[in-house]
Structure formats: structure tokens, C-alpha cells
Image 1 (cartoon, rainbow, N blue to C red):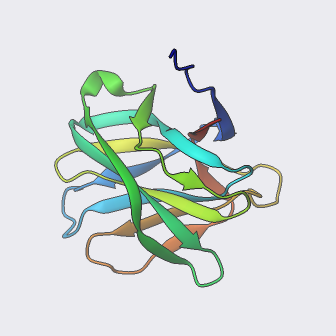
Image 2 (image 1 turned 180 degrees about the horizontal axis):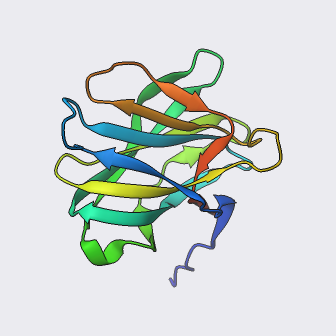
Amino acid sequence: MKTMPRSCRPVLSQTENNTTLWIGHLTNEANDRLAGQTFSCPSAGPINNIQVYTSAVTQPGEMLLTLHEFDPAAKTWGPAISQSSLAIERNDASHWLRFELEPVHLQQDNHYGFRLQTKEGIIGIGEAVSHAHSPFPFGQAWSGDTGRNGDHFFSYFSLAFKVELCA
């Protein structure tokens, strides 16, 4: 019996890029910087991949993306429900990077988030600042560090990202 390929489609994307959020171990800092993005899922289905835009790669290294359920009221991350990693090189700057994920079924209108980290790299993630004097409606950009010195959520910022689900 012939199996039909799944139809995958972007269900959420924010492609504007007018600033940079850095991740990795920056000089003179004790902890690694992390970045992430929360989002409300606009439709249900198995997730196929998440893409992020890298605006700069100062130091190459492996980048890990973890996907989590997210509680927007308490601003807390659930345990990772999927993850993917890529070896990032200098020539990956100014490119969309595709993190292939094991299929996990996302529920419509539930909240999720992904986090990005690298231990050996210094990587700039494309980000946008809202120009409309209103927050991004689908979620918030997040930054933190490995020392757990507080999570910072930003409604007027969003990473440049794309989420694809399959039918």
C-alpha cells in the first residue's frame, strides 16, 4: 500500500527582523545566555519543525531547541516535550535554520514555547520590536541564563520564527 506524504504548513510565523538577541557564553559573563519564544497555537496537529532566523554567528557551536508547554498566567515552562539540535557554522548567519522535531501533537489555543541555547557558540537570533505600540498578539520573547537569575518576558519583542504543523 502506498503511503501519502504528509502535508505540512506553517501555522504561525513572525519573519520581521530588526534587532538581535544573543545566546551563548559572552565574554565576562558567568552564565550562558538563553533565548526563547512563547506562542498560542492557532490550530491543532503534529508539529514538524520550528525555524529560527540567525542574524549573526560570532562563534560556531551546537544549538539546542527545546519545545515546552507554557503557562502564560504563571509564566512557567513545562518539561521539554520535544527537542532538536543543529551544528551552527559561521556561514549560517543571515539564514533560516530548520529544527526538525519528533511529531508531538499540539492543541489549538494551547500555549507552548521553545527555548534556544548553545554552550560553545555565540549566536545572534533575529528578533523584532513591535512598531505598532501594541504587543505581539501570539506570545512573548523570552530571555534567561543558565544561572537562573530570573526569566524576562517581552510582549513588544518577538523572535523571528516559523512553526509548521502536519495534517
